[in-house]
Length: 325
Image (cartoon, rainbow, N blue to C red):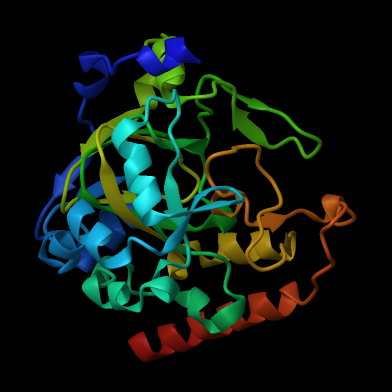
């Protein structure tokens, strides 16, 4: 609505910084203090060294990839040049958000302009090869764009590197559902009621409930890598034009949760998401797997072999543990 589009970010929403900011964080300390107990953290001194910090600016991306098409909504692609023109004038309540999983196929040189941090280098999903669920995305959006409250898919955890701009993050622990997030749809999946993040902040940010005491908040800026633990609810609001890289990860610590999930779920057809009503973010980002109870849904073909996927991932984990020993 025009009212929502006119709303401004309240400075109070930006005042709280309750997520640890760490530099010189060793892998061992990351695992023991953050990954194993499931605690968000910002790593401040890794992404700042990537070539992407200079190569993924608005100007450089426009110069190199103006004619490339990228995904900007669940089923909509747009030329980067057109998207950049759109962002200059965007006055939507919830602007379009470039959220592309195939950016390294479209722009192969981009893969060499960043490196997976050592903290996240254990990658057990690699055994799946081309059958691997979507796991990394290039993100680019103007102010007020972002991701509504969700939990990352398949019991993965995630890391998100801010390359340009600034992002406001809110986190709720797995057992604390954020206010305004309700069950909906035939599968009972949860979804944020408010259309836009600005509306959510306006209505729910100051709610005085138990969840508010357990909520964590931060702002990520260029060079920051945010670790999002498995199962945590989170939303992200872009405060200005922002470019970021996000990747989902499976390690030994979250392997059992992932394999339990896969044994109870059926993968969607490649490149498709099967749940979620968010019109502006590809559904595969949040719900890339479907439950057996919707396996007969129109247009969704049957896919089997999940047990083989689980065995393959578990086998890689066993090999990695043996090598480590």
